[in-house]
Amino acid sequence: MDKVERLISIIMILLKKEVVAATEFSQLFNVSKRTILRDMDTLGLCNIPIYSVIGVKGGFGIMDEYKVDKRLLSSSDLQNILTALGGLEQILLTEEVERTIKKIEAMVSPLSLNRSIQLSFYDWKGRSEILETVKTCQESITKKRLVSFNYTDKDGAVTDRMVEPYELHFSESSWYLKGFCLHRQGSRTFKLSRIDHISMDERAFHPRDDWSEQGHEASYLPQFVTIKAWISPSIKDQIIERYGRKSIEDHGPGLLLATIYVPQNYMGFQLIASFGTHLKVVEPKTYVDDFRNYLSQMMENYS
Image (cartoon, rainbow, N blue to C red; front, side):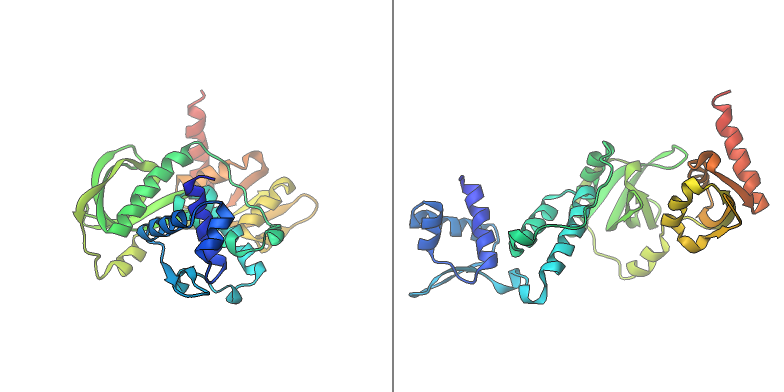
């Protein structure tokens, strides 16, 4: 066992126990007591709140505020936390998330780690690139430092931005940064996949007193329109997952009328088109006309 593994093991043990003697550690890892004392100094330098107890029952422990009181959380609670973190780990794989998972696992008996729920996400290649941007945004938010980047809007226009970063949001399958744009002098929301060449600036910023109000106004969610559409039984489950069972009316064998809401822009058209011939929009008439025009323009690419 190398030093790093030993240090991690020491932390895991101290998270589960109150005080552990240096001799107990030295026997467990087959190293000298002096080596264990050096390990404790190393952990202290890494900001792990280690304290020592002098006396016959003395040893080393971790400050209580660094621990979670296991009496407040059942084994089931801890497994639920691990399940949620397991899902987060797939879309936000950072060292912080990994460390948190290991800490929680250290509090659960190995015999009770039979998780009944597993979360899976598509492992898109672009996710690793996005996560680098996420990390830069996270660090800038924590340190209250400005970020600069090139931003490409939906029409392909590129602008240079300097932003006070405040919040990261994950919605559907995309990451967004909410902040105050110095270039536009207003609160804005930026889709991370449209950000290039991001860097954290040396300059710090003071959070704006009215940010909470401005931040809610700077929403990345589009306006929605409610439509009615005939759907085939083969996509009924997909409609239920997104809109619920009450969104579907049964009009006889194979006749299902769905009332759903979609973004009132090209994203809504893309969603509807993804169902192919299994969905036919019937109301409102203006939306039917707009969707038909969208499909006509798409067909022109193949004419």
